[in-house]
Length: 278
Image (cartoon, one colour):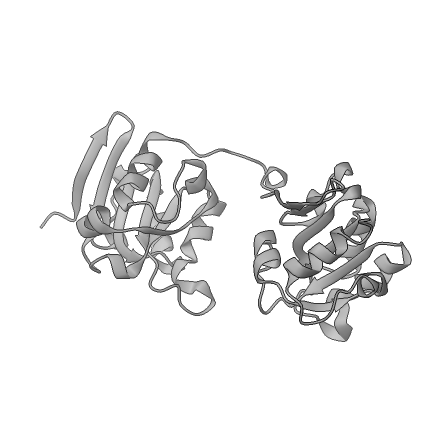
């Protein structure tokens, strides 16, 4: 029985269907896009790691607790290997060819996104993009995921990025929504950037509420800010802070703007950015 089915081939390599991630072979290394009928968690990623391919597709297994069923996406991202999952209900488990023909992409990592892969795309299109294109090779400080979520009539913006360390001089007039904790070290970075306002994570609070200790420090510096509850917004993902975040604490300056505990982060960000609007 052949363990691999070649679905397309070019000078760059092949798109290969595998019923199991355990069916990877040495000749797939660095050349081939593997379309597997395994979930794309850390265990299958370890199996694939023995012969690092060009790119990998697996199924999402309904994501699972703590995102365990797609955790291999980030494993591969750390290796700069494009990887994507397909929605489990679009495929037949154990049939790599079916994943290729009928799968629909549900999640992608940053290298796959670099290649043009997006959620909702057919798996066969995603596989071809990952074969034909190479991901970028950015440094950690170049992957900021910076996004302008809103701009008011005064030209002040709500800027979303994954960490306060990615703030720029331009952000002195912006509200920054980021995804690191707001402890003592976080406050140091906030003060260095001096944004018009900020929303960060409480980091899960920590002992003695140390994950939000920076609120008092920044208040003394004249910077309005708040934290979101780390149980609901993913740390390291600024868009999750903005879209999923629920305010867990705010300093006096932010409270004076109308920011309240339990408020959605996007509503709090609007209050902060518009606080001097005529």
